[in-house]
Amino acid sequence: MDLGDRGSQFRFLIRDRDTRYTAIFDDVFTAEEIEILRSPPGAPRANAHAERWVRTVRRERLDRMLIYTPRHLRIVLDEYVTHYNDHRPHQGRAQRPPNRETPPPPVVDLATIRVQRRKILHGMISEYSQAA
Image (cartoon, rainbow, N blue to C red; front, side, top):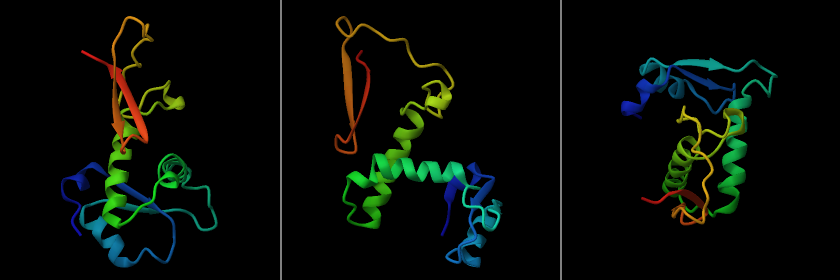
């Protein structure tokens, strides 16, 4: 398995001590110079951020769709990750998505402004923006 260009984006991999993670799994990441950090034994809440993301993606997406193949799952997750990081508001960041540092645009009067709707995941999610 090759991580390609994405491997340089990461410095750490945080994982639990499950026996499903073999030495070969670790070797893929260490070859890309990614340090593997194992959660402490008997500490189920040590990886709270990852657990929260898994719970969110399951609630908002996977529990509402029938996934047919691993390829279909990858497509759905890739599209959802883009939505999650670039558009979805996060309360802990003052309604900003993770990839945006500027505050959200001010609220506008919809009676005077045209709004454009973009369907995500075949209409299961809608993103709205101001039309040009």
